[in-house]
Length: 303
Image (tube, rainbow, N blue to C red):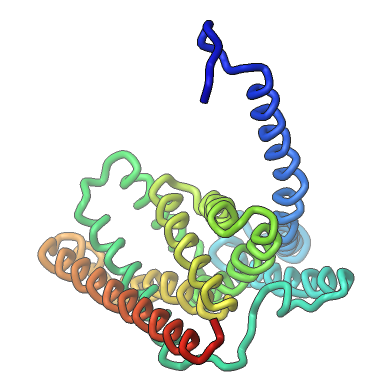
């Protein structure tokens, strides 16, 4: 870059930079704002169902009673309403729900499905175990308190059903489906993945959850692009969320197990190592499978 004698950029260079900045700003409003439309729709639908349930159908329940007994049910209703509205939205645009979401069931590999769930479960296990080894101060303390409030809001069965089944489906449809598909043609893979992952992370509150959700979302988004299908992303997300459901049932039906596990540092360390090792092995196997698939397609004249 050439500078004038005062160390400033030439006027023509300033104009180019200003044009690029304006282009990026216009691109943000033109593509990103419409891309978050399905997310806003989901938040509205879920909030509407919760308000209807708490204020109209169950006005005698206190806030805490509704949160523990009924809220999961109305959040599930919110997910169902979101799918209905997204289907109408896609139909109005002249396309289909599954096409806009890149969700396909045909030619699914059972082995790959099992690998996705196991990868998510193993990665969540390693992260949870290693976080448990850190002193409960600062972001870790906030994370622990958030987890406790999260568990307290679950009903016995509907909470687990919502967390393990409905949440992965609706979030993958919105973020790695509708939103990523809107941004990829205009922003490219890297920028689109970062934007979608940041948006996904913002839904998860605390600093640790933000980082966890960002990297998880980026990884899931990358797999969705490679497979041209969010079905595997949904299964990875199920695996990530499955651990919290398993732990919740263990803590619920085995009183004292949470404190006993927290006090057993060698066991937590072993669980973290095992989880990380399994996740890395699955990731390595997936990479080898992708490379072998490319070689087959190359010599078959498809590349």
